[in-house]
Length: 125
Image (cartoon, rainbow, N blue to C red; front, side):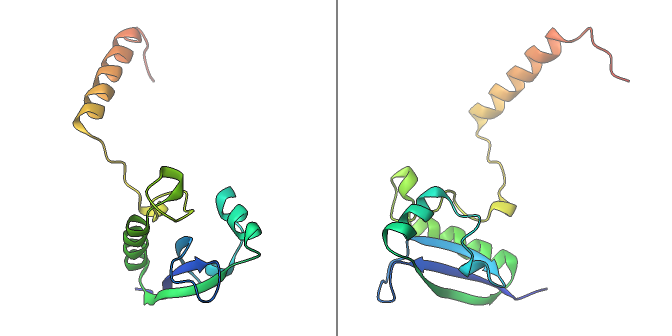
C-alpha cells in the first residue's frame, strides 16, 4: 500500500490560516495550475498567486480522500453558498459513489418501465 499521498491547501498568502482551496494529491499536484476550475484561476489572478501548505502527508489514497472530503465539508464551498472554498465538488472524485434516494430510485424504475413498454417490440441479439 502506497503512502505517498497528501492533502494540501491553497492560501492567499503565507500568514493566511484559512485556505481558499483544498485538494489531495501525490508528487507535484499541489503546485500544478492545470485541472483547476475558473473560480480557482480567478482567485489566484486577483490575489497575485497562492501559497501551498501541506495539511497531512504520508497517507494512502483512501486516507487522503477521506480527509479531503471532510475538510471541504468543514470549510464549505462558495459555489453552493456553504463556505469559503473555490472547490467545484465535494472531493475524492475517483471514489465518488452515486447516492440514490428512494424517490429517485422510484423515478428510475418508473422511467425504465415506461421505456421497456415503449420498446417491447425490439429484439436484441
